[in-house]
Image (cartoon, rainbow, N blue to C red; front, side):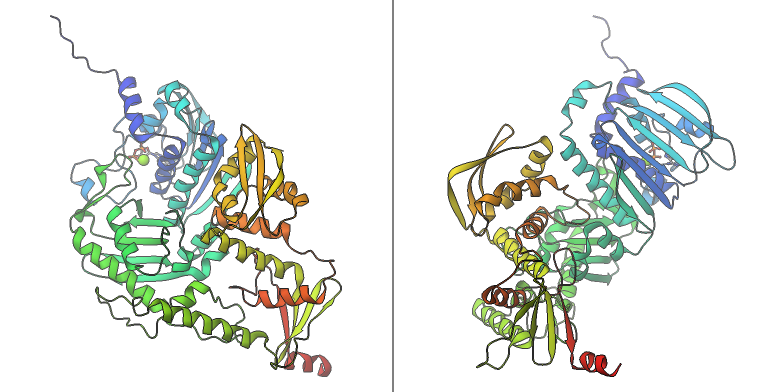
Length: 581
Ligand code: ADP
Ligand code: MG
């Protein structure tokens, strides 16, 4: 019998290896950005078309490559980053296996331009791993790599790609992880000709806010702990910012994003008693650890990692998180006049302990001091005191409230005049009540005798599928068949005649992760905007009173869901100054 073992030709083995490194457009983007970071770039520009299926381009201002290096870069095991086996134990760069470009170029059409050390710029074009063209280039700095037509020569894999919506989510995940771990780098991100991120060089907390939106600002609790085993830094999110998904969980080891069940577990355990069932805490945790104490190369995508000393690391992380949550739990002083922007959330109120112990003590749990009755009592007392502080007049006197210009509601408290924008105030009230219904799943709906029929575009359908739960939890009962939507029930409070407009309006907006930190938030924001009382609408005294009372029971009465100021106050000094000035 003749020999049957063959050595695979390199293009075949590269294509097989590509399956490990290049699973989808987002994995290509990850490798390209990591290479740009390793090349000491300070600016990285990303251009995506059709969720990366037709174009992924990364342009950097890093150290670039010589003509020769460009040729070598797409050969397997070509790397400038290690030369001997010991190097891999002390490596700090993002990649070092020298496989990425070889793998990527074997399954796509690639164009690379680069310039290095005042040599002339050069351009090469590679299709399916074959160099097909090269020429001089007038590129001025760094490197630009274009990946066109990913998997054009492996149709089985191309067909396996998910919808643009899903692939783009993966791309954004990759982008978020790298942008968060490198706030010192300026990033821009263009998707289908539209700039969706421009992130200038900034601090970590600003970077997190730039990506996840202004709302996250007041929910960031800094964490800092240095121990002999590891240093921990970054931010954890307040319990009330927890979500039904793990999408706000970021762990970086030596500044590289990783996934780790046991670290997730250790952090979640620190939130014990602070989260509703089914909710996950959010965090941006940076762990710095001696690279010889970990093995990062266990997974080709390098997102899984082995720690030598995971038991100790578990308790260090657990107690550091408890520690910083404990500090944050020190109750804020309630002073409306001093700081009207203070966030008084129901959840926060509920979880306020007396004075927590802030020593690090792994057994310590500052949140177990209350039983439910005490918690409820505190939250009730607290709410009454908010109402007192804000708006209560003498108890036997009715509130003096009136409307001006069909646009503002004027009210007073003991020392100030308050002028409220009726539209923004109502948005805030609705927004919080929608969010509440979504989170508590408290359905409140009316069945329609004649269901409303709407036909959807593909894009609307994509977005609808993303926020289907939100629609349900608020009281919509909807059946979707093919691209037809049948609305059978609608929430109380929404007029039947407006339903079509409301749904069109929600589904026509682009879901933008930079401003809306979750689908629920997006949904509640849109819905509150559409259904709120508008400027120009005359309100009777009951309606005026409703707005004032409900506004000041909100968590954030001072800002609209889009962060606009809802009311102004004029105190005694302000008024006196008007007369003296
Ligand atoms: P690795 O990053 O593991 O070394 P890659 O296949 O990703 O392997 O890249 C191969 C080599 O190409 C790198 O070691 C580097 O020298 C060079 N290279 C790739 N991208 C860039 C870039 N954007 N700027 C400068 N050099 C780059
Ligand atoms: Mg690389």
